[in-house]
Image (cartoon, rainbow, N blue to C red):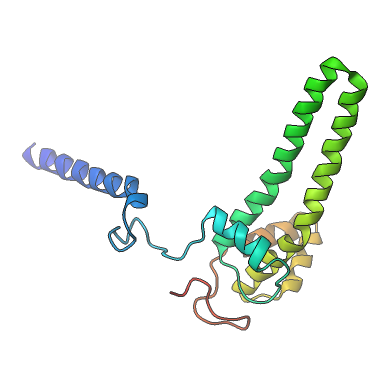
Length: 178
């Protein structure tokens, strides 16, 4: 019974230590955070990925993109047009209570704005996808495998979630290298 109690106490202390460090990541520098909590020092954040894809590498199809850059930008391209459509659709619904014809015009405007947003994001989306494939040491032409129904899309997702080639590969240096 004494050994069991001692084990529970040490286990609880370890859990509290992990939560203490996990909750304080943003308050401390990366050198103060234990390695098991913050093991990747060069992961891009949401705003950094958006800035990189839209400003710095808008149509750059060369080089490599880490997973964090690709997936944050993917999330942005999925959420951005949806938010635009919802905002204009809500506005058209509110206006529709006053005048149905004007509400329909605003609903059409929502569709047009979403199409414009998607067209504006097409080039940077393709560019970051090609750079992501380069990080896994595949040519950008592998994007075309997504045209094969189901299997091609699954393989493309697999490539995009796979870890990049460590060190330098055929497409440039490791983007996560310190």
